[in-house]
Length: 282
Image 1: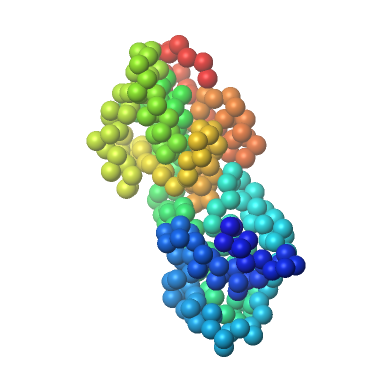
Image 2: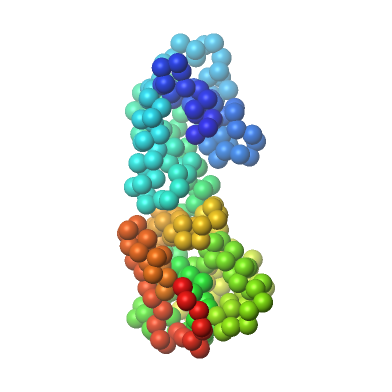
């Protein structure tokens, strides 16, 4: 949004053409997904020609800046996203009429697809979306038997299960496993981290089958803002945007409440999963 704000005229308006050119030119290389996508000839084949005088007479749709920002935020809110992503800006561009984008030969739909794929990864296949999907919280890892020993499908009464670990969970585990405390909770977290470490590459790519009917996968996409609950919720909403019927698996009361407000189902740990009861309060 900083690049778009820089092109606002004296009346507080931002125009499609100038906004696109600002996104193309102003961010440092690699700093903007939108800037990268706009350089794709299949997205905007005449991006560099639009700067020339032959296109200077073309007027494109405009917004008052506050209205444009409100439209972007509305898309983030509809996605239940805790942060505005570049895909939400692209969604506003995709709503522009065909005559407006056609005058500068912008493929707004392709732009949205490219930006969304870059932020959330490529769409998941029907097979990958099948079954029950749970995003694990640290308080589940720290209270449960090793993931490969838990009968996830039997206890949840489902035919297939996919367990997701997020970047925010791994960062929390890094903190927990390096603490000197030897309580059961941290021992369980260290055990999981030690099991995961040699499998990180495979988990990150296509997942690891921990049982014949259960796969463990990694979701790396969400940015880490430093607030554990927000980062975890953001990972869940990103997975939901990719078509995953995600369930937040947690014993954390605040996280459960926040998930409920975001329309995300939750699952508390079941007694069959428990190892030994650690002395820890959420």
